[in-house]
Image 1 (cartoon, helix red, strand yellow):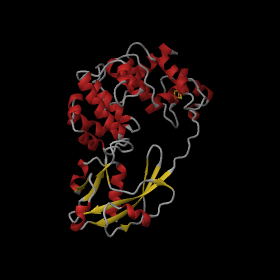
Image 2 (cartoon, rainbow, N blue to C red):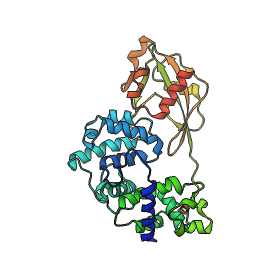
Image 3 (cartoon, protein in one colour):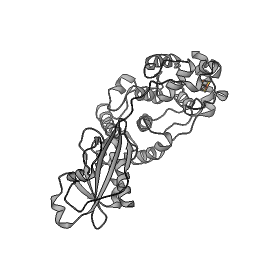
Image 4 (cartoon, helix red, strand yellow):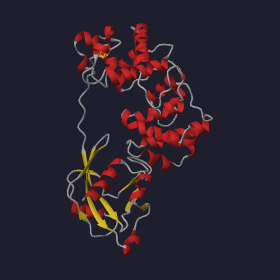
Length: 351
Ligand code: SF4
């Protein structure tokens, strides 16, 4: 299948490639900085969401050196809304490592790329292939699906991962490896889609075993996932007369590390007793528990936050804990506020 598969896919790619803000025009080598930045942003995030973030980032920090020199807080706040914030911290650490240890140039081979912060097997292969034309095999969820169907792999994921990677690697051509990697991504995103794959227009239809067996839509199979637990807490929105809201910085390690947040009680599984959770309020005040809940889902758990609101009185400002600060509504976009906290503030303001 190898030669024919790559040749057919590349011919299709030449006609149907997606135009994306981080892609180099046909026939030109891509900028490693843009490839790396887009690949980090695209982890767990859709192409449609990433577009604007990517444009803003490269406008503000056009090179890896510029990003390396930026304060971490500026990077975190520019990232706010993209989720999975450890990526933003690693992005910054990686830019610094490239600037300091590699003279501002990304290394070309997968092994050296893998040694950089936040770069895993998929990203190392994608950067090596797309930016440097090396025959590396980049296997993400889209490619996993295409390979599972091409070979009719019925072993459920994640057990099928090793076999999938092996088969994907054997298909990578020696020439135009970067275009090939992007062609596989495009095929998975636009033709070999999770539901209703468009087999009739697929350039590799003739070789596809799942299509012949009538299994295309059933693959890849997946082992059932354990249900996510739900954690609950009470968030405290303390507002000054001028509308400024009290924020605090999260610890430098762990979930949403280093981001800003509205203070809250600890997030725990089990029933929440809002009246008891008031004991965790950042200052004594006339807290009013609002109707409704804010819901958000993280990788490993669902979160339900009740929201309490109070007006700040001047006499109590001296009691604020270290690490807290006031933020006016017009400066909110400059802060590294994760989506869940934006939801909490919107909930408090709406009521
Ligand atoms: Fe996917 Fe259908 Fe193409 Fe097979 S023929 S690779 S199932 S789109």
